[in-house]
Length: 254
Image (cartoon, rainbow, N blue to C red; front, side, top):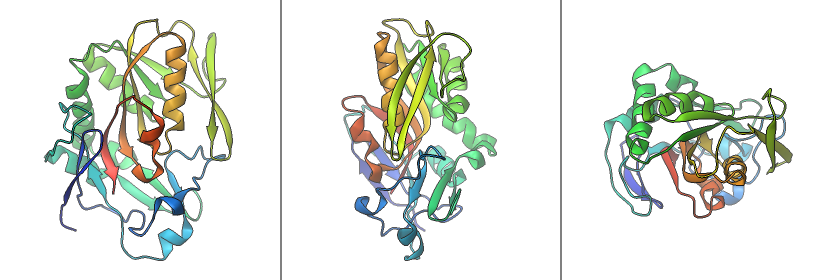
């Protein structure tokens, strides 16, 4: 598959490199992927469209991101070899954890020290001069990317956890899933009013988890600088749910 370049809204320029394994079908439309596998799986990185996966031999590829120093309101075309390395290291697994689900697996990225370093470096380059005092990582994969970024930019790391995981006093935010609700919690006193926060997770699909994290932080008077993810599934329009909060992604499905 030849590399192609296109630009997305909010400053994301994308380069479509070859995948190690097939991704979801190129024939998938937003209307055909409305069912995310939530509930027992949490559903934050899955498509549930058996017909779309099985009826077309074409694949959708990953593509890359905005420039680390770009304004999120502008489209800036960037060709960065680091993005191709990151994108090609992400494995896509059909029919996991059950038939019809397509799983976006970042564990293969973690097995590639070069790709993992590039991922952290790109985030650090973007945020090191933004006066961020808190990096808030969303359970669970936000715990992988958040701490090294926080250390590199001189910020504290705050875990945003599922219910009954934090030992101290917490504040909670309930949010909707495709098939039910879930709760996110944060320690009382972990974030102070006026602190500038970066919210990070591995993937944005429908955006519900990031919205819950932002609401929790804003309840204590924090200022959300930006949300950042390694992967975006733009067909699910999670970016739209963030309102005026900017989103920065490294890899976007196309």
